[in-house]
Image (cartoon, rainbow, N blue to C red; front, side):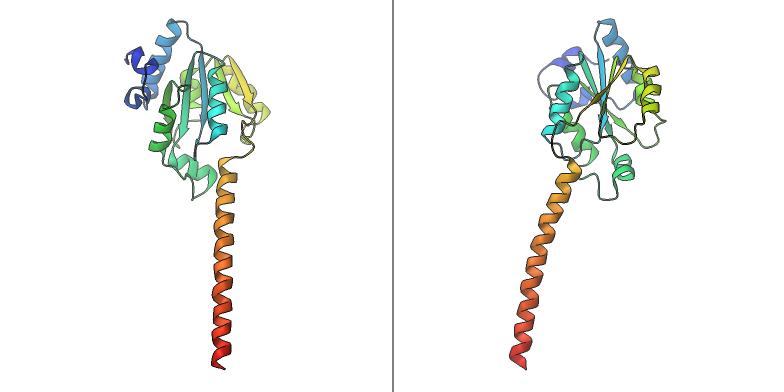
Length: 196
């Protein structure tokens, strides 16, 4: 069992706040509930962490006492978002979260986890899901309520997303490559013209 100071004290204390084993996480949650703590759960990829992520987690924490964050594994992110994702590997994404004062405990969500396994393990008082997550139907949201006290659907907290930032970056790179190619093609045309 972790010392509460390891969770609530200063510093990231990643080794203490990251709990990969769901059974051990369930024990921590049980102990926290005995202390009268209200448990909040939020999950996601948290790739290329940005202000929208930080604000989202801050608002999630405001809903209760303890914020547990599930982090999608690299394999899970690749399956959902494509072969080029995540940009930031799972180990770094989890360590970044450990440095946020709003995040209390962190766990990894693996691709082979059963559906809603983390939700069923923690049975949070409040489950926070993003309005932009397209995989949650209204029927699924209602079904999730069986495993938690309340489901809060949170609006995006930024005008951009990680995917949009990646598209902008790629667009900028593509435009620069296009300009260079045009310069090279013009040089080749001039060179050919000089040889005629």
